[in-house]
Amino acid sequence: MNRLKSYLFRGGVLLGGSAILAKLLGFLRDRLLVSSFDSSQVDLVFAAFRIPDFFFYLFVGATLSVILIPQLVELKKDEKVQYVSSFLWGVFVLFGALSLIGIFTTPYLVEIFTTGFDSSLKLQIATLSKYLFGSVFLLALSGVFAAYLQASHRFVSLAVAPLFYMGSLCLGLFLLGDRFGILIVGYSAIIGASLHLLINILYFYISGGHIGFFWKKPQKAWKNFQGDFWRRVFNNSAFQINQSVDIWIASFLIAGAVTAFSIGTTFGHALLSIVGFSVANTAFPKLAKAKNNIIKQQEILKSSIKWIMFWTIPFAIIGAFSAKFLLITLFGLDGHTLYMTQKVFFWTVISLPAACLIPIFSRFFLANDDTHTPLYINVFSLFIATSLALILALKILPPEKAILGLAYGNFTANILSAGLFYYAFKKWKKPLS
View 1: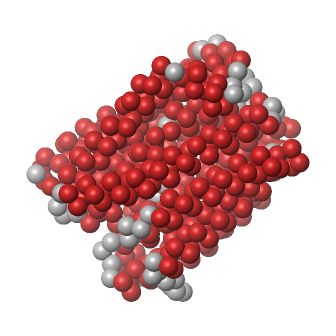
View 2: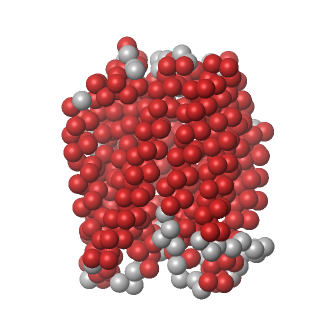
């Protein structure tokens, strides 16, 4: 038990510390965006990120590790080389093709994802999105190496690589924002993603990793892969669709709404990556190895939940009572954009502890090869939350307060999803204990 706590602590502190620095760099990036461009231009930057991010997080970012790791931990050394190599070439070919399609169809994708923007802004969104599709392709390749290192309990490059990516965005905006305008975001994203990939490749080989030319090897690891893959993708699709619909709704609202929703949600969920995902990613390989030992899994889960609650509850309380001060100090917001961001941030941050529990509960089920329960819970809770946001923002609330619909949607999604996961976990474990 002491070794378990030590493992969770070391891995969690390393990833958590990295997430803190990356989050601070993210706040700096947003501050530079707000100070460098007008509200409509900042809106289009956040909207441009959403289009390639949708496909990246749907098929790669949030699904790769939970697909690769449970199989990887059970394979022999030679089989691991085959499996990781197969994954890498699969991502290179399949996601590379998807990224190319995205680059050539951005004008059509912009019409779908950001319907409410005017045509001049849509044109700029499409141009920036082309560069961002290139960056997410590089990040997808990097994710394969990162998943292998995570399964091997090697977290150094996982902690360092995101800092170079976010640092590149900040440095580009600070030094060259005036010269290149919003396109510097695309240029910087390409450079940052290249560094992200390079760092993970170097640490992969330093750690004894190897890549060969294999396709769907070993066969036993790819058995029933398609059904499991699509369930995990559909599990994540609910969240991605929810985020995209929220941006779509915000595109119909007053200028600054997309910025307010993006900053309010990101800042309100600040500890989701710092604590929630760091703890979940650290615990997941252990949960996968212990899938036939429910007692050990419960110990891992209990220890993880304690850490999550210890950090998130105080942050939620402080954030709720000092929202306006924090937003002015960190992002330099004012006027109605400040009002809208404050509302989104408040309702998001008070549900932050619940949001941070979702990744660890989800990985408990995934580690036990249960892809159905997370799928049902996420689809149901996010459907309710998105429907609520849509009706409130576009039908009921007046334009100046319509952002509250999105704020209430964030709150509902977090609370409902965490509650359903806890209920499902309690019901799931009883027959096995």
